[in-house]
Length: 103
Image (cartoon, rainbow, N blue to C red; front, side, top):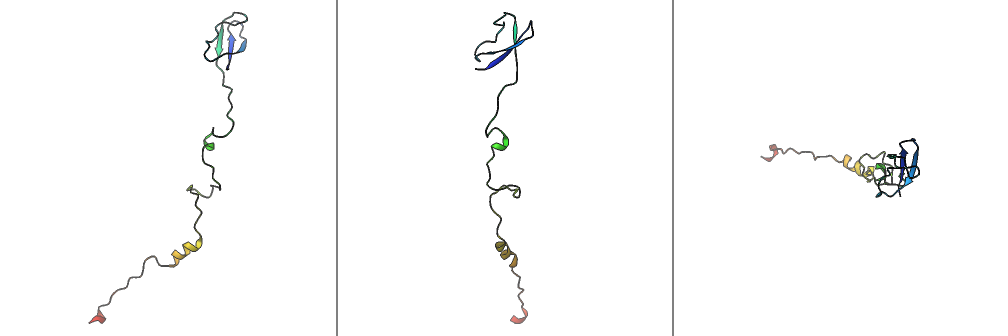
């Protein structure tokens, strides 16, 4: 049940009363009969646990993401695979046919 804060308009004193949300706000102090006004106060809620913040909703990765800016979880290729492609020429050498020896 929520607790509401009321202020006595004649004396300036504040007091708290637990009321259901469906009940109407008090208009008079139950003890003195003076007119009262409900005071709006900050809610007393506390977010505990995970899932309440932006960084909690992201998937946890098993490794560090500092070195990998693409976000993929694949490891870099070994150097042996990349050295094979570098040692072979990218395009074969063109051979020029000679017509001089054919006649």
